[in-house]
Amino acid sequence: MAEHNQLIDAINIRTAVRAYDDEPIDDDAARQLEMALQPVNLLGNLNLQLVLNQPKVFEEANASGHLTGAANYLALVVPKGDEQARERAGFYAERVVLTATLRGLATLWVAGSWNKTEAAKHCRIAGNEELLLGVVIGHPKNHLAYQSMTYDELCERQRTHRSCKTYEQFTVTMGDEARAQAPDWFRAGVEAAMKAPSAMNRQPITFSYNPDDDTAAAHIDTTAGDEHHALNDLGIAKLHFQIGAGQGQWAWGDGGLFIHQ
Image (tube, rainbow, N blue to C red; front, side):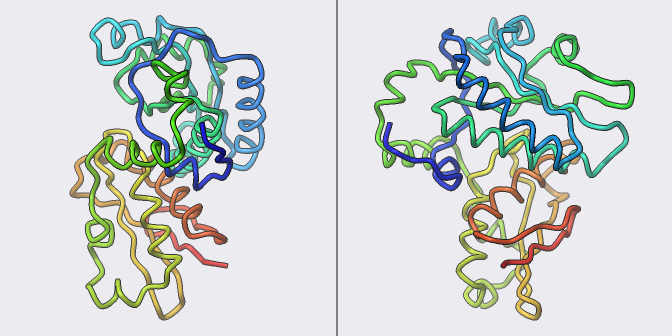
C-alpha cells in the first residue's frame, strides 16, 4: 500500500467495510490502537474500549450476510445522561478509526448490526456509564490485495463506494455567492466532512460560514430523520472538517463554532 501517514490521507481512503478476513489483529496493531485510545479518553472524558475476538457479538449479522467475519470492535462507553458525550464520542472514536485506517485496517460504524447486550458483556462499564455505539475493526476481506493497492486507487475506491450528498447540500443554508466568497479552508473542511461516516449513512450535518467573524458553524439537519444518532454524527463530521480545514478548534454542540487558526 502506498505511503500515507497523515490523517487527511486516512479520510481520503476510509470506506465502510462489511466483509472481514478471519486473521486476528496482531499485537503491534492492537497496541497502537490502545495507545491511541488513552489520550482521547482523557481529552473526551470517555471510556472507549477495544474488544478483540468476540464473533458472538456479530453472530446474527454474520450469519445473515449483512456482515462477514466481524469479530472485533471499538466500544463507545460514555457517561449516562451526558448529551454532549455523544458528540465527543463520535469525534474521538473517529480519530481512532482514522488511526486504524492508517494501519491498513477496515472499520464500520454499527448501531443495529450487532448484539449490543452481548457486546456490553465484554466491556468495562461503570454504573454511571452506558454503551452507546460500536465500530467494527479488522482486516478487510482479501486484505493482501487491499494492501497492494496504490493510494490513488484507494482514493478512487473511497470516492465511488457510496452515494454522497453534494457540497451544496452540505452548505444548504448558504447561497451561491456566500459559497463563492468562503475561504479555501472552509471548502476543504466541508469536503473532508463529506467523506465522514454516519451511523445510519444519512449524513445529517450541514455547515455554514460567517464572513463577519471568519468562523464556521456545524448544524444538525433535523430533516435527515436520524435524531437518535445525530449528535454522534455531528462529532464525526466536526473531526473530519477540522482535519480538512487545518489548524482550528470547534466548540461542542449543535451550532458550535469553528475558529480557524
